[in-house]
Image 1 (tube, rainbow, N blue to C red):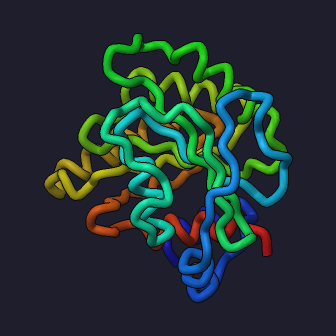
Image 2: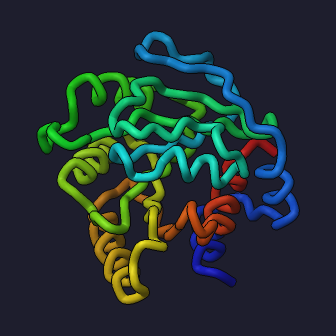
Length: 220
């Protein structure tokens, strides 16, 4: 039994058959809502999994890789450009939520007030939100702004799983070091899921485990 399966059982999460996972992520996935203000969110419906991370962490690339699309989520060449919360319907069973990136370049170490206001309103008041996928760039590690987001998720009592991105850019020993750093950081946060997923959208590595994790949160 894998480490992910053991933790899923300990948390009473539904174990998903691999064929079910394959069908879910090979099926239709469509954009259906964009919200630029906290009062513009769609009515709650399907279970939701939200993707959060610093600008240029590879969030859109990961969503595209998971769903097998090239341009489902827009990959901007200008970090920090996306300002909307975008909602995608995955097979009529799960909503993938693409949150605006945070902490770009010249921004201070503190979260931008506008991002925190809108995102915290979503996190705190969304009954269908099952988990946040928190992306950490393997090349950069956990930065102060990432710690601020973890604190925000703790305060909102929203479960999140840490996901390393761009692991293909590192040597094996560097990947091990990056993994150990993130695992040590998330152990200090009460809302963190106890399993780290290491991924590469370019090489499609680590995606199957993350797909199975997300599929367990989908509607039956």
